[in-house]
Image (cartoon, rainbow, N blue to C red; front, side, top):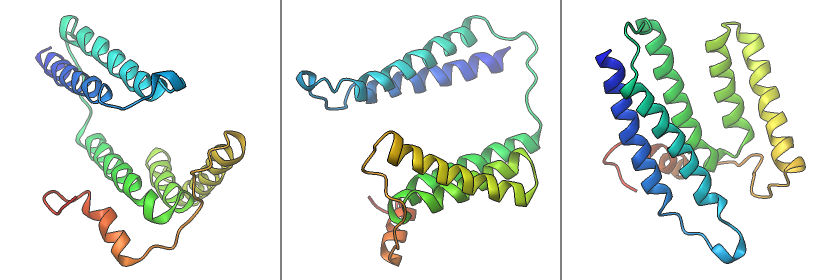
Length: 162
């Protein structure tokens, strides 16, 4: 019961910070580009409402996941953090295939199926983004220099720079 309220409070603080950060996005109202600001604010509002439900109506006997599940969640967070910084130096296809393969393996531990799912997801999403949604800024691949790889990884290391 107390754990739900603590989690709700942490989520509420995060949601308010997310909304505050979204208000700092510069948009041009006259051009109709209001979605870059509106969409994160809506996500923050939904998260705030959910956190208030956790605070005011907690589960009387919550079942927390086992240690293995927390380990899987930590691996997923690390994979997604590395994925987000590797998209710039490596392009879209390779980081997406690797991240999707690792996350697929966590869902169903069959290496061959996970790699095939990662490759298929990567190529399929690239085709959708590039050819269906016409997003011209999606780069298929890049050949990085060691300096660009270090710049990308250093974002994840606290107190290194940037």
